[in-house]
Image (cartoon, rainbow, N blue to C red; front, side, top):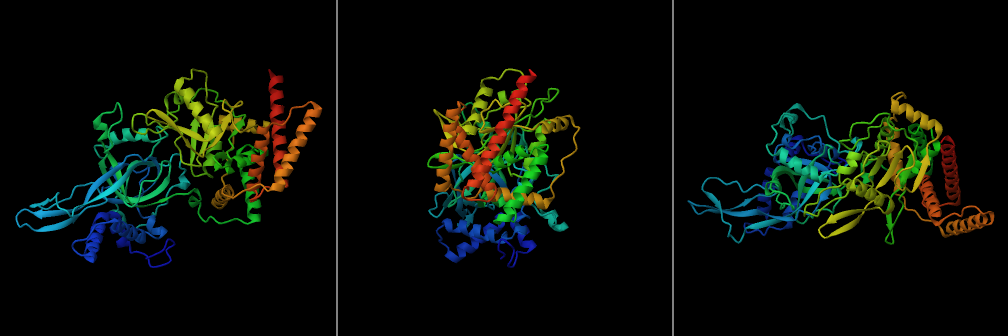
Length: 600
């Protein structure tokens, strides 16, 4: 059997298709062999689940084989997949609290006419045992075996960009295509509408196309934690959502038919796994790719090199916990984007309608795997919950229930005059808490629980943001003019990066972001002495003293400058470069402040 790189003997196409189209039949044969090897009176245990897992992992051990498994995603509607098909689902665990279920996996069945007794096997399905005429299950037989399975509600990863989705193979033979389980003209299931309504409550970005399913994990596997991003390979079928109704919900809704995926095996998806060919860059690689990245971001931002430098630092930021404190966050507010000349239609989905801000967000979506756009439309802010709510017993998704390291792009340019209601105020407060504390409050019965997160927030605005950010920067005057042209539709299209350079930039960002970093004692002492000297000079000259907050920001900028160059230890040169960037930023912001006052 092939390894993950297909270096050994690969499974035949016939074997692959059998495992895809008839996985339950394959598993039943495995059970018969498992039973034969163990004798008639076998004791069913976790060993068989591992046997099934090993078999399917072996058959689909090459990347080419994996890509032949049908993908269950936002493009595949439930009615287009035949029950009993093997599928793969890249998803985020939205609600792991669906509890446990018991399934009669090994049943002793009796022929009512002859008295013959035999074992009947059924697993990786919710369907009852299918028996021939004259046979019935002896539910009191001591040899019956029940399987435990943990159930979680999983949804498409919010904001997943096209390049970060699972790859598929398009080159199957014509006969193979005919035997695949997905077809565009399959009849839709009569229960689609009900489960679609339910799934809307489980997906953070209301109105966005997505896939949702109850994923069932068989012992010894357990359901992953909330917000985990996983790749699931399992058997698809339509089954009952057995979780009881929440407060104020009808039983009929709680018992609706939902898509279910019975997990045969699953694996965690880490961000660095999404970037192909990821390897540790050399020092010269870091230098070249940093220069390439700044140049690309500079073209995105209308030729504003300083803004490009800060946007790069923002993209490299990552929140980590150090001794119960969260460090590394670097939210950024870029100021100077044009306000749309006319009021746009109310945002029904999470997509930016301002061509200028959309320009920036689309460019970022080419570099990060998960990119979520939040237009500050009053209707959206006033009607859409931003925090998850489990007060009724069922965890309803909120906008900020996002996978770790998701990029959030907020557009304040579309915020018009009007009334921000109570829910809108709470939503902005929740977003502010994410920026400052990197936590999201989950509303549970009788209490609210703060859950840690790691979300990067970029705010694009006309004037200074209504939110407090770690760093704010006015765009240069030429960039402001260019974005005004983009918003009017007068600017030329952005020259796209070629695929090789795009891949190199993705590799660079992932490698730099994950560098282990520390500040040597010598450099720390140097920074402390410089800070004391600056405060002494400011005090003597009667100017504003540098605050602890400003020092902390300068250290954060220095840290990001260092990792942008591939450095794992802060150097004095990088500290001085960071101080220079901060001086340039302060000068520009002050100049814009003076210009604004004089124009009034």
